[in-house]
Length: 299
Image (cartoon, rainbow, N blue to C red):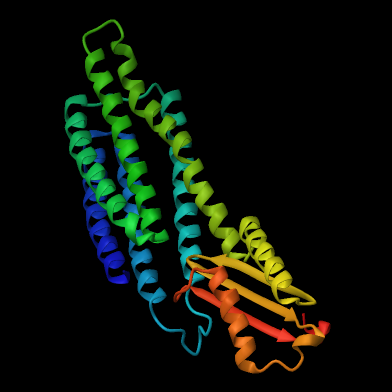
């Protein structure tokens, strides 16, 4: 699975870099701020996809001396960085577009812009479909972030195509005076529409970096251990749980009753296996520790 994930990310990096370079070059040549914004957006995504690929390789490595609990924390760090940069880009683009509108806009060659938008839309939509199909099986958060980026790119390009098409149709009509305002107006609209998506990514990633326990995950473990307490007659238990990237961290401390004071280690291992099976998600991304004690001070 990791090999497929890395291959998908490599293809995405190449495609994003090509779209970004084409967008920036064409936007500067045509004098279109919205196309330059589209290119910069893709350029940042290309850099972040490269970081995601590096993290993807780290995640399949065994914990080392310096990172004894694995490399899961790098995943939300990349997500937070990516989202933060995109939010800043959107804010900058919004300020720039408002400034352009106040200056009366600028002329644009709509026929060339339409051709650019068609080519870019085909590329973005193809990559979006390709990654969605593969990630139904992989369920990779890194690829899911990349899917989000390609979805945004597709929406941006589709909006550009509609705006440039409208500008082209306005030429030679009584509404031709609106033409110079189309490019900065669509840039302002795109900036406002796009900001919430990377902002949500930042908030989610920062919560994981700060090891804030998801409420649903906490309730799940609490209910499961309440059932196990009734089944085995534990005196009480405590737990800590968090999600960092694709890594699930669960630590459970159980106070045993008098009746289990002389249980053998193999019998306690059977109880531990029962709890582990009930939690599920078995695999390299689950960090599970279950400790037994007769002294409440240890929980």
